[in-house]
Image (cartoon, rainbow, N blue to C red; front, side, top):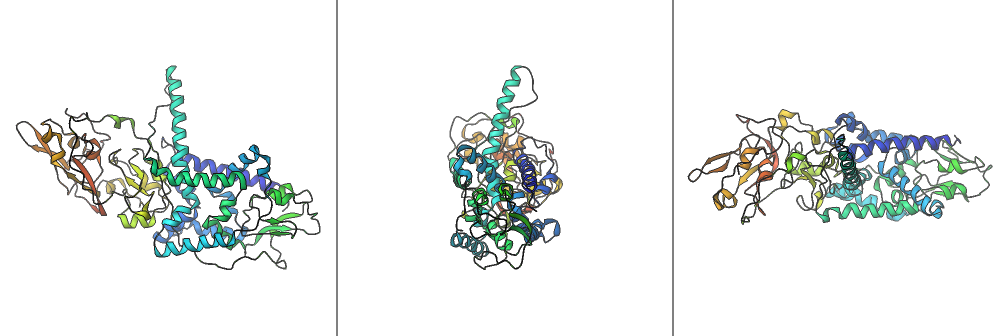
Length: 519
């Protein structure tokens, strides 16, 4: 086919796909059903591969669809389905508007040694050490971090600004949603990749895809035997060079009538600019040799990528906390293990399968999830971890387990989630203001949904907390509501492997936030 209609189809399809992904990550009101997430995430290569390796069911085999699509059509995944690739196209277009010379790409020799070395290193590290490197470079996870740490907060700021304006006219269609951030160091990797990918796409088109991205390199290898690809009609070509200048992958050597299929992302820009109709997209002509590069072909073991800081909204009711004590607490929390989200089954299993895409951080309605920095060690950086100083895990919520694209968080029915012990609450009496200030409290007991934390007689009319760990589920209500600073009088120490808690006798199943504290 020589028709420029192919390019228009690509633009329309990729635009719709990008909008869908954008909405998934910035939906701070949870308007999109979780089933919709699974449809969108099905064709994301690395999350799908990880889920398939874990579950071995066809419903998780979206990466196989991508492989078959690549064998048939070349690297169409990179232009049609990869959100980071589509985002690069957007930046590239903006760059062309800013400086016209950015639109004139021209043929460049491939970074063969660099890109195949990165692919080989990624495979070796994944097979011997774990998924950290592949989750660092996975395009879906990079995009997820961009959305969670930059786009979502921007959407919240705009929402709050409009809510403030409408509120002046007594119109309350929009409500103010708090913008919650994390420590500055957590933004280091997302900012670095934003600058790298953004700068390269703004000035050099798809250079990141064809120089760094291991998935792009892998699909490029498969494209060497694809059935459909861009072809030259040498008799019609005048060697004007327009195709080369318009190719954002810089893979068309018009002087040799050659297209480097390992770098071509099937954007069809060349079909649009060729005035002689010398280029077409169709079945490969076997008699014509293709550009040769390296010959390595291997299977990629799926991994996943960093989940740097997510910025999620904390429900408004959570702002009501206990008054600040008069004295600072002195006993440091002896936290031996972090708390991984429900559905993770255990820290080791969770770290192995999580791609750190930040979707759960973005979707968490209570904002209790944050990207890990050193809690899981180097291999678990940017994977989600519970931060009970900032919020707590809502007793009636299973959203994170429903939307995880890799099944690092296994789906949990609500009743099962209510009996899953993520960790155990530990009480530090020497920090409690009942002992240090002889003041009535009980915030932790009031907020505990299972009543694992309850009050017992202490001195005179005072009562003090006690923990029944068998029924504690490690949700963090008690830790979040405890008013002592800088160290809490009660905290949750994570379980290495999630276990079943005993069913409590009386459960306040609908508790959302700590209610009135007895101060």
